[in-house]
Length: 77
Image 1: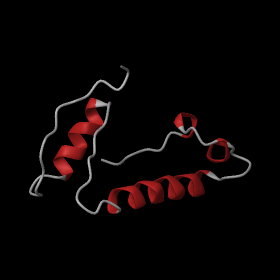
Image 2 (image 1 turned 120 degrees about the vertical axis):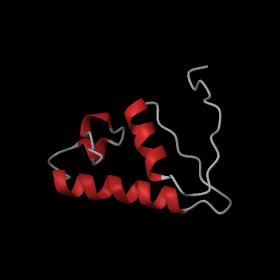
Image 3 (image 1 turned 135 degrees about the vertical axis):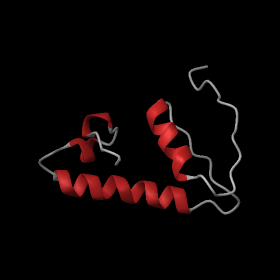
């Protein structure tokens, strides 16, 4: 299993521009963004996904680590 970056889903216009950022560079930059965000928490980090398959993958990766399952919040409200 591996995560796949989807350029068209990215909101940054520079990241979406294939002339400015190659596919390989885009993948590296996106992975770096997640690495920074996931290692920055001083007290803890909350990770969730609206995609059930991704959420299941996240949960499987965190098995054996100290985790707490938080209730889902509807972000559309």
